[in-house]
Length: 345
Image 1 (cartoon, rainbow, N blue to C red):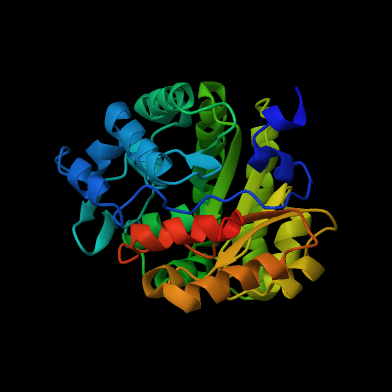
Image 2 (cartoon, rainbow, N blue to C red):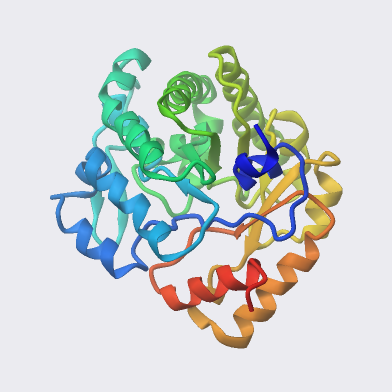
């Protein structure tokens, strides 16, 4: 296949430096788009929305119709995995996800991974539909939450402060390790199924990597992620995998070198210089514009975007945000950003 036929995102993930870099935006299908807000009303709750292949496909297509982005990402949620494992999951409007917390339960029990993957069949149908709907030069990204991030929700029953989940590592270390092992296996099967359905690459969201002592970071982040990547490869998956350890801080080097990731998502708080020094030479780096600039717009957005382009100019780079786009961002500012990145203004 000629280079121009390979999606730009995949070329960079394979170590090529492109100018301009490819761009996609975390949570690019979502609440900042008025058409998404209308679409969301067609499902009675958020999980039903995620399990509707037709609605999920339409959500993915909406930003692609507006902006010349270089990738589509599956519309789903990291908490479909605990839902499929039999834990009660629901979403409170304006507050976020809620689960029946494991903390306080004497024993923790889950459904098996095989049944969980059967439950997630609508997600894989959505991947198939999206792949059929998008041009071949746009990469399709599948994703899942990393074991520790998903475990924090399962333990606490909510997001926010993670102190309760962290204390459980000290109180019930063997039970937490067993939970992480269940999540490694189920998540690996989940990712492999997405690739079989048509995903070109994968991203692992480690949204809650911050605030961990180094030994705990190794125990709940690096170790389980390394197991996850090894298991995904055992299942025959060869596509590139991006790891996004938000808030990893000084642990980002260990994450980049020890987990097996092919590329590294960079959060807003981490400088390009830090991550370029910490990551293996030639590793593709993704990020790391502050999402708030897409609310402010104007000269602030322009400067911040050009700073990111300049900071990563000598390495394989995928332009993205340092975290997900916010509902307050405007489509006009996203349009402006894409033009800046592509050198059209």
